[in-house]
Amino acid sequence: MSNPFEGLPSHNENLGSQQSDSRAVVHGAAPSAPFSLADALDGLNIGSNSAVHVQPKPRKEAPIMYPPVLADRPSTSQSVPSLDTSVVSAHAYPRPIEQQPPKLPPRPETSNNSPTTPHYASSYSPTPSPVPAHKVQSQSSSEVCRPTLPPKPQEYHDELPKDESTALDSFMPPCFIKSTHSSLTEGGVRMRPIQVPEGIFDEFIDIASHNTSANLETCGILCGKQIPGQEALVMTTLIIPKQSATSDTCVTEHEEELFVEQMERDLITLGWIHTHPSQTCFMSSLDLHTQCSYQLMLPEAIAIVCSPRHEPRFGIFRLTDPMGIDTIQNCKEKSAFHPHDDSKVIYANASDGSHVVLANYDFDIIDIRGT
Image (tube, one colour):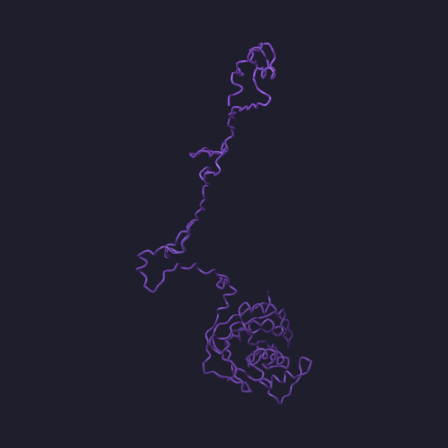
């Protein structure tokens, strides 16, 4: 079909150079006449039943300019993908850099003689490094090369340096007791022998000389230890405690100080010693009750009585067992001095063929009266 608009002047040719608005001019019309659609169609022989098919020219649209997506990113060698692309390339964006974990410092060697320990890095392998050849040759085939362990810490400080007071703990005089020595009580019970220094009598009489001149008694405590590896006791120390005295009595005071001295030197009580400043050497009724308390704690405990002004000057005694101990324990007398049944042997000499062995050796004397 023919184009109904063929022969019409183009729109660009009818533009007036001096008109402000664009007006279309139909062929044959005056240039000054205004544009009319009826006039334009009047020259066309178009019937009322005719259909005019206008096929406009396709309009070429300008492409839409989008801002670049990767404008803020650094330029790469790959090109920016188009928005029309349905699948984005995997290389369009830079791949993040994988950060490796920091390397650990090398493990220090525990000893110069130990094999080389492997260094710990990001890829740890439990397999140890090979042992040097010169060290393998020095070991037998059955030995396993292991690093030496560090020294064990001293948790309890059992080897602390000892001061002057604790140095006396190690003092132990020589033993003069024969292995064949044997002593029994009156009831047939074996008693451990006690070794006593021979010089204790004169030493104690000299210590008590001031009180003796004032007609006052003086007392002391016999201390010692058990001989290692033997069923025997040895006297090592004489302690003079704080005390109050009369002509026929002596009472210890502040016994806690005495106990401290014994504990610091690891000493046990073996008996006691006292003077009779004006009387002979014997055991009074008060002495018997005092000795009973010592002997109940230690069956071998002894009592030494010194009589500076009479002969014999000293004696070593013990209560008979069981007769003497039972008699004193059952005594109900409250007075300090009272008689006991003379028909019973309440105490006996402990030095003549008994369990006391006299020997010549040195011993310690601790006088805490002035402290």
